Structures are given as C-alpha cells and as structure tokens.
Image (tube, rainbow, N blue to C red; front, side, top):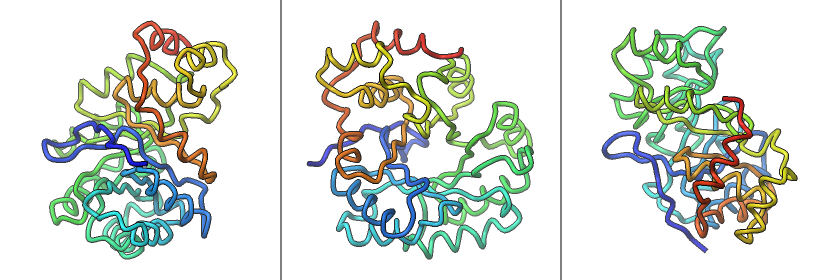
Length: 260
C-alpha cells in the first residue's frame, strides 16, 4: 500500500508532508525496523534528531527501503547544547543519514531559553551552502521566533511543537500563520484520552479508530503531524488517515477540547 501524501508549502518548491513518521525514543534495530515499516507503508517524511541517537539506523532504513532519496523528506535537529558546533553537527548528521542534504533542519530547543540568533544565522549560512534545503525551529514560542526574524530578517519555515487536541489554541495557530511559519505537531497521541466520547463517536461514524480521528484532525487543520510507533500494525494504521475527512462540526467538537 502506498499513498501520495499532501503537503504544506515551506517554500515555493518544497512541501512538508502532512503525515510523517516520528522516531523519538526508537533506538538501534527497533529504529531501523520501524522506519523500514513506515517507508514500506508509504510514509515519505521521516523525522529524526541528533539527540535521538538513531540517525544511522534511519539512514540505513532509507537505503535498504529502495525508495528514492528525492522521494523522502528528511528532518533532523540541532541539539541546544551544540549550537556553537552547528556545522560539525550537521555534517555528522549527513554522514549518519547517508545523504548530501536534509530537507529540514531545526534547532531542537531554545538553548537555555534563548532564541540563539547567532546559531540561527549560521544555520541560514549552511542552508545557503546546500547542506539543508530549509531551516526552522522546534519548541520555540512566538517571541523567540520574532527575535530570530528581527536579528536576521529571515523567518523559520516551521516550528515543531507538542500538539494535540488538548493543546489546541486557535490564536497560536493564527500567530504562526501570520508570520508564514508552519506549525508542525509532534507526540499527537501522548496525553490524549482516546476514550473521550468526542473521539469515539466520530470514530464510529467514519469506521476508524479514535487515534485516526486525532491524526485526521491535524490534517484537516493543515498541521503536519508526526505519529510514532514501533509496532508495524500501528505504523500502518497511523498512516491510513486519507480515506475520510472530518466534517466542520466534528472539527469544531475536537477544537473545543483545547485550551485556547
């Protein structure tokens, strides 16, 4: 089974697939087999990070999958304690992944709570050299994003944050979109009560699982989402969210679970 995944534009030429495979906490052979399963099912966005310690396994899975490099969007991240070694860290990531460039490179967390404008400027330079096609941030607040823009005149293409229905905040979504920053969500099912009647009722209506409802809610909002699992059946189920859509009323019901 393969599925063409719709994407959200990061630049006029580059789109971020709306459903990607997260690899946080997947290590060693588990990271390899889970990533292979994801690629076999049809995922075409793999999200990793230097801090995850699995870039080598992700790269091996990509090579062994037979999927062409140009067909897979790869994200990795710069650890906050290595912002002063950005080039060396990215070059190491590229060696481990076995690629010439990543599609998206993020500052993983604001180092010591700072926006790290100097590191951001260096990342922009490495992007211009072609080592990363696009650059962004993760776990940043809006003020920190604005600080980067004020310092360099360039906006992160994306901000990857913990996002799920309980964290829904329309004002935060709007703040990102006003700045041209794609809000991308990780850990969509963590801290999500899948037995909530809102999810179970919608799931029954569409003949899907509550987890698929949560993931489809992201897609219907145009928010790229990164489910993660080491179980092949769950990897496949999390990707199988393109055969149905939530109605406006269903989206609003899920939105109402949020804090904003």
